[in-house]
Amino acid sequence: ILCLLFFMFSGSRHSSVSDKKYTPGVYTSSFTLGNENLELEVSVSDASIDSIRISNLNETVTAMYPLLQPSLDDLADQICKSQSLDNLTISTDSPYTSQLLVNAIRDALKKAAANSSSSLIPLMSAPLSSR
Image (tube, rainbow, N blue to C red):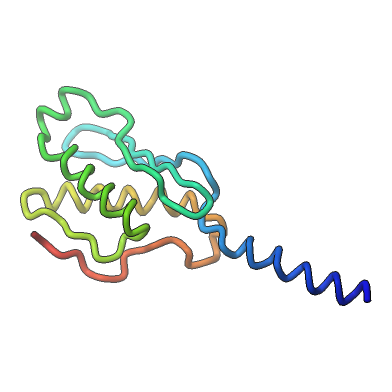
């Protein structure tokens, strides 16, 4: 009877662990835009992507790259709603910048993965579409 109870309850603990996609925290990824080194932060809980932002964005960078923040805001909104990097719609106004941001977000999510050997990271498997 004890063995039966052990197996019965150990299975439920296993399934809750498998539901965990990320190790909660804030993960960073660096990228370069022109001559500027920027750091992107992705905040995750154990099962979701909560927020995405650039931590060291200053007035000089926003003046030189006025589409950077709107591109990030658009991508962050899509990713936080869908919880995936699949099927993102990239603005035709800033495709290069948007692709840099997607790559940085992907790198940060790889660091956040709860189990590095699993395929739980929402990697992009579909091509990006343009607006």
